[in-house]
Image (cartoon, rainbow, N blue to C red; front, side):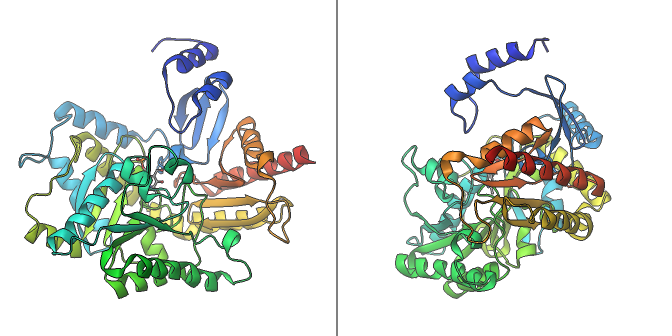
Length: 453
Ligand code: PLP
């Protein structure tokens, strides 16, 4: 690798590299922050600044940086068999073994997996598989999939359509046909005078209203993230998912849990649906399956769908060059082995998650903070103008971005979703590192308040 100054890297970056979800012109003006190396939960930029990565990369580096077993697994598999495909009735041993291990860690009705390279491809697979399922059952009219406003399911045509991000729909003529949305279970914004639990039922019943509006015999599936991640770590009321499950069961509609963020321990169970009390028919996963060391995603297929597709489905005309990529699968196997050896999921549930919740509860006392929410190792801090009335800041003030800039300048990576500051730190954090992160958040909140006054 060439040795260049930060300014030289930034100039080359601006000349050639179009970044995801980025205003290219604006970035060229400001210059990227160049990340050079990482260890455990810390990053270092090209100027030598040390940064606590409270977002685990992009919700993925769950086991932290520098994990030798993952590095070794990739190197060894690359030497032995870097790639072979799973088309034409061939298979590879890491893919077979990973499918077995996934069937062990997932809820017991998941015994099959379809591999992809990303969460978006996983959700595209969901659309095709759900529609195929109903076709095979002789109900081809069941095409409609219901997602949620402010849900995020990726950036491919189908993924972005399932998601409910208006900015994404505005570009490229989305959503694709037969995908529709209901509002999100965001009590702080939409709950009004209802208690959280009452609102959870209200929000779930929007699904029933939508099913009746579309026509129950046309609805194929409902998809949601157990906890909305990119939408702002919106933890639904405890009543929400059980009611969603009841409604799906009542109308025979498939339930899809997008576990791309919540899967692999993030919420204190292997999958977020276990924390939220639902029993989905499909689960999309990616990110944490390899701790982000190498791209891998997929769909866990529950017995209801697997039985139909296997016994009656014939050829499923769908797949990717890298479905079951042996090197990616070898890394995932090493990652899951490490998670089990270190008892990470239990630690998140019993030690780390509760400590994060306690520290966030203290942050709730800050004058800028309207509410905090946590679930396992994810958390949100909602910044508001008026705590008592839940009144938001004028969006032109971009208070979230002000706070994010203070984070950057103080060695902390947090994400701003509007005025909601969010974290999803590595699951290997120590209690002392959670304290270090919470102290930094306290500091950036103080700096943000001082700047606003
Ligand atoms: N689903 C959820 C819940 C996500 O958060 C993401 C990415 O953040 C995706 C799907 C898309 O995954 P990818 O970026 O790997 O395509």
